[in-house]
Image 1: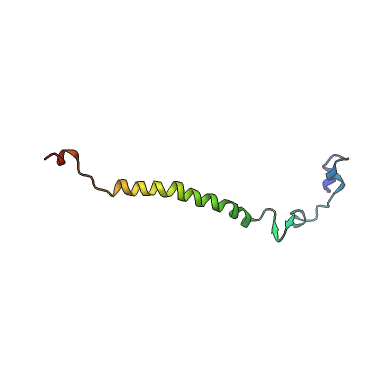
Image 2: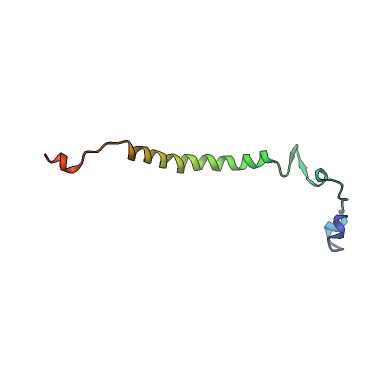
Length: 80
């Protein structure tokens, strides 16, 4: 089945019909990277994950450690 059979005639896509020969033929390549490359996805997600860890997870962890591992004398023991 050709792609042009599923697209209405007269559209620009219909003139560039490609036979459905295989999956690798349909994935465009750009300089050694495929369009749906998992490495590209991780490169886009990594900075956001890094910033979330630095500005969200790390302060919450520091607050939790400070809350549970600091000792404060009760007020009634300071009055004596």
